[in-house]
Image (cartoon, rainbow, N blue to C red; front, side):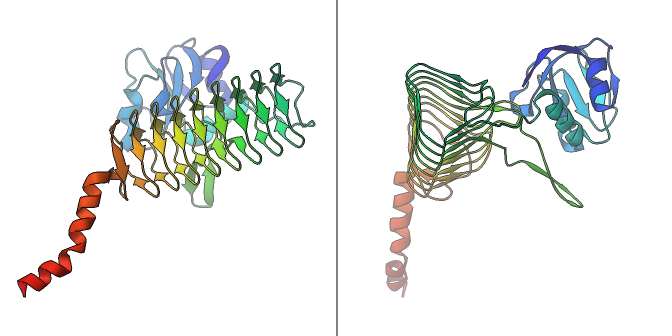
Length: 309
């Protein structure tokens, strides 16, 4: 998430009530999660295991719960609870805005786009030309939709990320200040749920088609001309490259990559990154032909026992 202007470090520290290490006017451009940070971004870290990763990342401002040696060219925001203070920044720069209309006056709707009754279009949404938004679709604030997109009934674009910190009193939600971005010619089936990014974008590439009852987690990036069949669940921070085909009821873990033109057969469980251009099946997913050979060999075990007797 980029801020509306560049802020000095001193002002950011005042917003969240923390001390800091660095020049008062050290430039702060925005805030992001570790996997998408850029120079000028704030990243938070609250566990010693990940201190080095955060300090050595592209982020130039580190919100941290211990005063450590500050790397050259960077600054620190020192907090007793970085998770809490990251949420404070999200509330400040991307606060929740209630709506009092089915289609927000601040939404931009392109020429030729049809929005069916009972659909909801939130604040600052942008929808391109010649789109069809069916009834009971909910498009949360700041969502971007390209031209010639079709979204079927009951789909939700922009719900919060499923991201929590366990506290003694229960689970504390990491607030979502990101967006959902659909490029041109995307088709989304009925009853799909596509969560917005925590600070960045959940993105669906040009020409991709998604079947009914599919879930995409926060900050996931889907490439161009992909096909994703019904009841698939993709976790957060997954990269699905161009022209991937994922059949029904596939599930994936977070933070992996599925390579270009890979095919994942139905009911597979994807637990690690998959190389492009191959066909996969099973749980954990592996190359389909090899997996079928293994199953054939398993079926021969009774026969082999008889021979051993």
